[in-house]
Image (cartoon, rainbow, N blue to C red; front, side):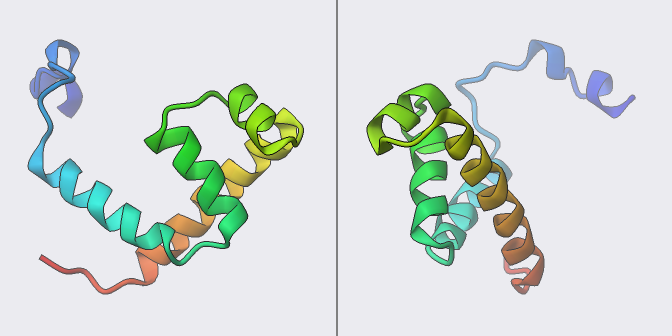
Length: 88
């Protein structure tokens, strides 16, 4: 498979592929288009690296609510990404 050919199993996580960084920047821009509840949950989860349990405690909601917001937020991000014209 492609993954094995590219040596993914030996990848150094500190090295970032420029393409990934571009995607991350795009994603951060896309986040601005999300409702605040989703943006906050996703930012805390993926930017701040908090666990759903930690986010739940911070926002004073249940862990389930956090998981749902993250899931729905990601689904909305995918839609936004698909709608945006390809650049670069």
